[in-house]
Image (cartoon, rainbow, N blue to C red; front, side, top):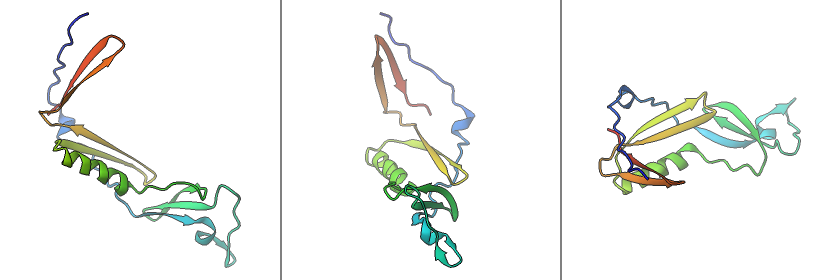
Length: 130
């Protein structure tokens, strides 16, 4: 079996100019029938479509009563808190797709952080890029 090679990647421009879309937007799960009405009466809805998700003032989804809504700040801020507690340096890239879906990449840039990944006889060593 050959020894693992250290992957050397030159510093890239995208680490200097990462996308930083707003992802901590006002949002809520609300009752469909209270949000919509017809002639002053609450709308009648079919089972499985009892609620709506409102993101940044726009209706973005229709969901059931049992849908679990997790605001972005409850998830992403917790990830950032854990990284800070572990004293891991990172760069964040956030993507907002029309206030409907969101993605965040945490690009680890801590010189002290690396990990070995073993899979099916191959060995890959990851090093932080900076």
